[in-house]
Image 1 (spheres, rainbow, N blue to C red):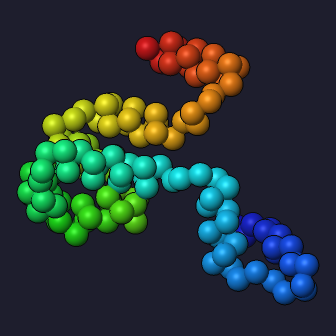
Image 2 (cartoon, rainbow, N blue to C red):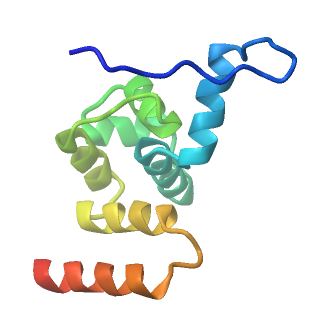
Image 3 (tube, rainbow, N blue to C red):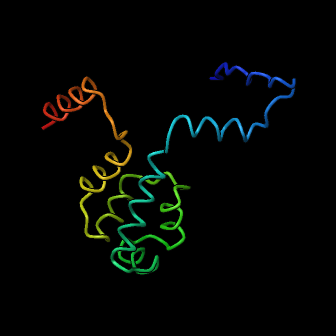
Length: 125
């Protein structure tokens, strides 16, 4: 099913912006992707353990290249792959996911949104 996507608005000089610039601007407006923050978390955990990609990847049962792609946010890993790497880094999937979620939260969450989040977590518990 094709989506109707409006073309970008013309620039004041009459030229259209390059598509890559449109995508980059949209990414900045949306904020970071979950997979990028996940990758940052995985890399930080691996570095904290002073491990190489090969060491961590070997314990997780993935290739060093795959782990590198996860850390750079170029892979959209399955939950099984994320759990395997989390286990190799001696963190739970829950702790890893919470760390990613906390990194994605704005530093100043308004009261209504915070209350909604607390309510949702209370219901899930």
